[in-house]
Length: 280
Image 1 (cartoon, rainbow, N blue to C red):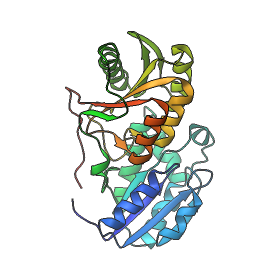
Image 2 (image 1 turned 90 degrees about the vertical axis):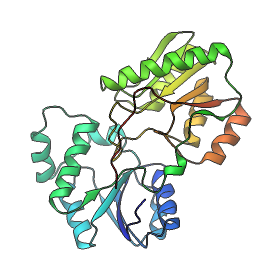
Image 3 (image 1 turned 90 degrees about the horizontal axis):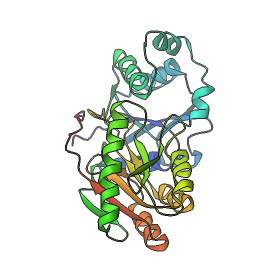
Image 4 (image 1 turned 60 degrees about the vertical axis):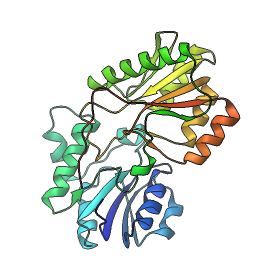
């Protein structure tokens, strides 16, 4: 993996931005320039980076000009933007024009268009997994107790259903129990789908989360963290199945501790349909 001396960080919510910053420093990145978003990015990260500026969601031209001023030629998108803030989008002229060119407006097309706009100004969007390759688990049990035969059947079923849902661009997460789909993720996000499905599963549901076919790893990469395990526990989901080598697992030590405490298992399954990646 090539180490870039300066990287722009488009920072959403959660621990993902901090995890990236820490990994980038370990890899030798000397300058980190953060574009933070109001009501999303955790402000305590500011003291650990070299430049910081606040933006509203939709201020694409302002963000690109900021990166250019800071001499940033490479950037990463790390952390999600809450759906409620996407509904409150107030686009600048560049964003408005970009959105107007899109026939379909979903995560893949919008983020892809953002990457194209950045490239026009000489800023390359790197994979969101840059410097985090070690956080992507290989196939097998990741944390918690081994899966019994019945749970493994649900794991395979849920995984395959999630793959089909992701192919249709509906969502990347499903909740199942005893071969029945209880919930499918849509625009509301993973946590909401987990809570809906867990309520129906009455403590023994399974969640499967996968990458999209031909996943563009520059954005929208599947991620689980300690908060995911906490949500699973509260929702009554006893097993999480993720896609091996395609899912970022943040805060692994905390995940393992949560799984041991609450009796939750995490299993990584390898897909027979490989996802694509973007090399840096």
